[in-house]
Length: 80
Image (cartoon, rainbow, N blue to C red; front, side):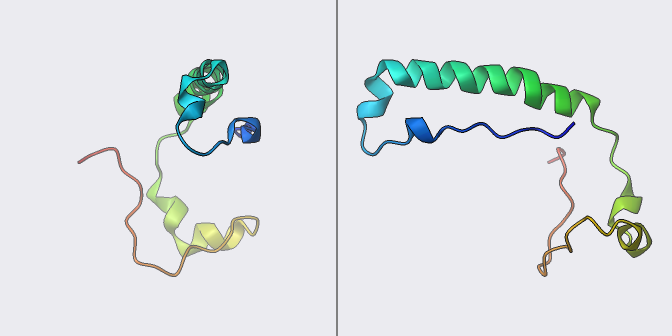
């Protein structure tokens, strides 16, 4: 299952008034629920990293994956 985005456009405001409103608490509650359920579940069930996923052989077999960006980046890592 892919993580679904949430529509927070009703909370888009400029200046500092939003942080002092009841809607800010509502926004925080929705964000907390989403991250502690959907996002946490996706992280918990994610497979271990496989270096094969960055190989040309693997990428060529999966046409639905967009091409990698044309920049020099390292794969994501939680290690410092």
